[in-house]
Amino acid sequence: MEEHNPCSTEIPAGNKASFRKTSLSGQESHVPSSEVLEAIENVIQDVFQSLAQKKAPVLTVANRTDWRNIEYKDSVGLQMIPGCTTKQIRSDCPQSARRFALILKILSMIYKMVQSNTYATKRDIYYSDTLLFGSQSVVDQIINDISCMLKIPRRSLHVLATTKGFVAGNLSYTEEDGTKVNCTCSATAVTVPSNVQGIKNLTSHAKFILIVEKDATFQRLLDDDFFSKVSPCIMITGRGVPDLNTRLLVRKLWDSFQIPIFTLMDADPHGVEIMCVYKYGSVSMSFEAHHLTVPSVKWLGLLPSDLERLNICKDALIPFTKQDENKLASIQKRPYIACQPLWKKELEIMAASKLKAEIQVLTSLSSDYLSRVYLPNKLQFGGWL
Image (tube, rainbow, N blue to C red; front, side):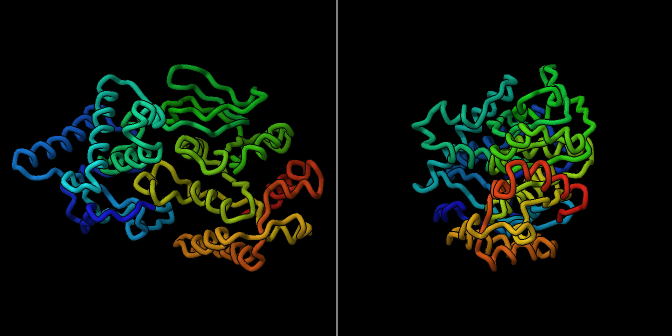
């Protein structure tokens, strides 16, 4: 959550003169460079007009992290409401002047990149002047604010996210530069492309997609050749909380193939949180929900009820921390949980036991129990929520 800033004035819905009128839709995944340049020029023009009138310039951005500005829609997930409250980043207030200047600095960098048709990662932008920006998180927040303010997807701003996710299994595609990628033949996983929007010619005979929370579990399934033994499938991991490109790829695969998508997560609040990011999206990126969420995602495991069903020894389970309790309580209050009675029941089991388990706990039954027994049985007999 962003801290409250006394110089950031909250403005009710409707007073958003500096916002572009067009909103993002599921179809509008790319904005032409001319429109991006025009949107930035409009912001700068507002700054110049304020200076010409001897007024302190202000920038108007949406309150992205405020749950009051978020609505849950079954077909989309968490999305920002059209009439959300906004805040002003003032240039004449000591506590917001620096942020105002940094937004203009990054806007100028984006403008040059769009003009010259070059790209940079958020990390590149931070390392262009580490002393000025102070931290990577400052750059990340400002870029998201700019994307939301201009109503333009980050990819159209020529800012790429650093990819950390992997994909493997029955999938081939062509990258934007013409490179052909075949995940099926690869003995190791392929890094999720940095420009998911640019990939084309996606081909797959997969029967389902399996999202795996952790890299270690993903690698184990890869070593066991799981994606070809049970039935052809595509495996993806965001290696914890997924980066933007991993979420974009999951959505692109869903749009392309319309096959079931299952998640394999730890039976703990953090794993549930990550699953919800794939399925329902996150509050901070709710303004891009149409491109990032896949509401059809199913919870395959590890379910809290599985721990009792499989007679997992309690000594192998981990007691909740206070942080776990707070995280679970927060998730249980979210609007989408009320629409998922079976999920709600699983969370209640977890809350009552105050115990959590990693996927690796299944090795207490046998070393290959996950790939040989657990997943095949779940997929065959419908053990998902």
